Length: 197
Image 1 (cartoon, one colour):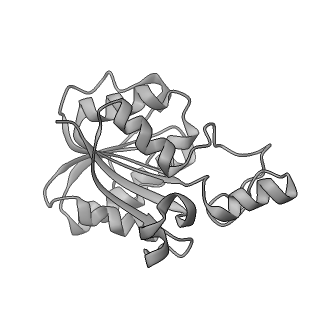
Image 2 (image 1 turned 60 degrees about the horizontal axis):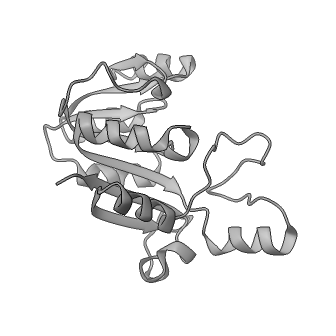
């Protein structure tokens, strides 16, 4: 399991109801079921990952996030999670609204395109950034939106989304002093817990 998923689990209260959007192979939900005794569902579009979820004992719905979450009622879940997916969806604002309609809180993680090495790669080489947290070339990336930590926080301010908690990590999934002091410049992966008043 990716190390940031363990950090996310610390934000989930035991016994909570969880919806994981773009749940992949279901590793996070399986972990939360075992160690946090949550009940939940995953939404996943990839058929192979859907089968892995079923094999792992994770409740999964084969669905496209871009179609929205209309099948779920208001506040159906305590937490709605979207890890490393926000940058890969076309309708980011609508999906954030839906997350916070369906769940009391939202948790998102994404790569920070403002990381200093990415800036240098564009400025000096004239190439789109490729690295540990952005492993794809520009022509085969699943990323639709390229945004920074500062961009995301500005969007939250504009949409009146409360940032309840933020953790910024380096490529080793650690939170050293640098990313804590200058998150937009030195952070590679951002984790947010969100809510609405």
